[in-house]
Image (cartoon, rainbow, N blue to C red; front, side):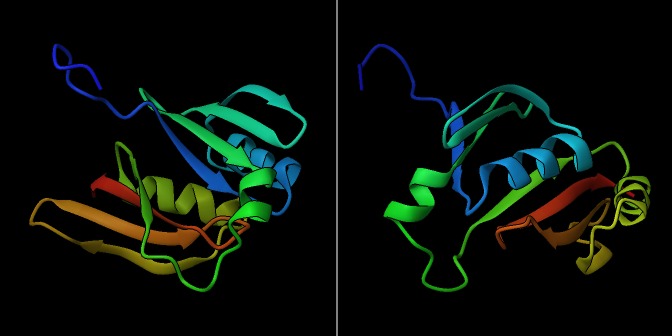
Length: 122
């Protein structure tokens, strides 16, 4: 890294057993814009950070159990987003709950078992 610029997070890459299935989940179910899709990769616009889905990553670094990673998705209303995703068939591990006084969170998994949370005002 250079000394004149601060590092910044540009992408989160998640391993996936089925890039097509995961790309459809993140684009169609969650509403992230699919930017490119080729071979074993899909890239989605996650609002300032690119979300990458990689079949290659899943094969080269197989999951060994529950990973201590959670991808947090900022939303305008946790309860409205929760309701909309439930209507699309998303099963939640934890329903909306207060996490820091004014912000709520609701937790679910993607098709590969990656932990995701909605976060924001009720």
